[in-house]
Amino acid sequence: MSLPKAELHLHIEGTLEPELAFELAARNGVSLPYADTDALREAYRFEDLQSFLNLYYELMAVLRTERDFADLADAYLTRAAAQGVRHVEMFFDPQAHTARGVAMGTVVEGLWRALEKSEETHGISTRLIMCFLRDESAASAMETLRAAGPYLDRITGVGLDSAEVGHPPVKFREVYEAAAALGLRRVAHAGEEGPPEYITQALDVLGVERVDHGLRCMEDPALVERLVRERIPLTLCPLSNVRLRTVDTLADHPLPAMLDAGLLCTVNSDDPAYFGGYVGDNFDAVRRTLGLGEERLRELARNSFTASFLEDDEERRARCLAEVDAYEF
Ligand SMILES: Nc1ncnc2[nH]cnc12
Ligand SMILES: [Zn+2]
Image (spheres, rainbow, N blue to C red):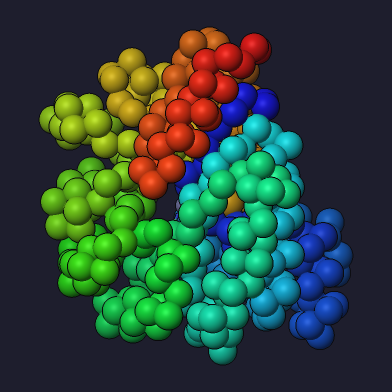
C-alpha cells in the first residue's frame, strides 16, 4: 500500500534479503551454511523471538565493510520508497558488529552513505537510532555509547532490543541516563514477549518517549489507560508478531482493539526480510485480515508522523500529514 507513512520500527540488519546475503558473502569470502537462497529461506520458520535472533545474528557475518552497510541501507530505502515510506527512523545494532571486529565507524559511516542522499534519491528523510542488546551487559551498552561519541551528530536516539525476557529495562538505567544527558531521544522494545511491567519500567526508569511493540500492555487495563492518557506511541509490527508467534494468527492481532481503546498505534515491519513483508505489506495485511477501514488506515499513517522524531523539521512533518489526508485509496 502506497499510503504515505513513516516507519519507526525497522532494524536495518533485518532487511538483509537472502539474495543480498549471498552476494555479500561472495564479495567478502564468507561461507554461509546454506546451499542457496531457497535453502536459506527454508530456515525462516521461527518458534519465538530467540529462534529468529539466532539466524539474524548468524547472517550478519556477511556485513563487513562500509560499502556493505551502504548497500544494505540503500536496498531497504529503495523497497520502502515503493511502499509509500516518506520517513524512517532506522535501528541498528552496533554490538552485533563490534563483537565480530567490525568497528562502530564502519557501521555508521556505511549507513550514512545511503542515508545522506536518501531524501534526494528516494524522497525519504531518515534518522538513526542506536540499539543496545539487552542480553549483553549494561557495561557493554555503556561502552557502546562511549564508542558512538564521534558519531553522535548522526545518531538521533537510543533503543533497546534483542532477547527480552529476563532482561528488564531497569538493567539499563544508567546507560539511558547517560544517553539523555547527551541529548539523545529514548525508545525501547518492551512488551513484545516480556510482561506489561517491562513497559512501565521503560517509561518510568528509562524515560522512553515511544514503546517498541508494547503489545502486552493489553493485559493491564490501568497501563492501557496510562498510555492513552500520556499519548505514548506504540510501534506495532503485525507480521513480525505472527512469525514470532506472539499472536497465533493475524486475525487474532489486538490492533483493532488497541485502536478502539484510543492507543496511539503505528504499523511497522521490524525485520521485513525475515517476516514476509515490508511496511506497506503490513498495512495491506491488516486491511485485508483485520478489516481496517480507510479512516483507520489513515489514522495509522497520521500517527506514524505524529510519533516520529521530526521536531527539528516540522515543515516536513506537516507536509507528510497533508499528503496522508489527501491520499486516495
Ligand atoms: N523483534 C525484535 N525484538 C527484539 N529484538 C530484535 N532485534 C531485531 N528484531 C527484534
Ligand atoms: Zn524490533
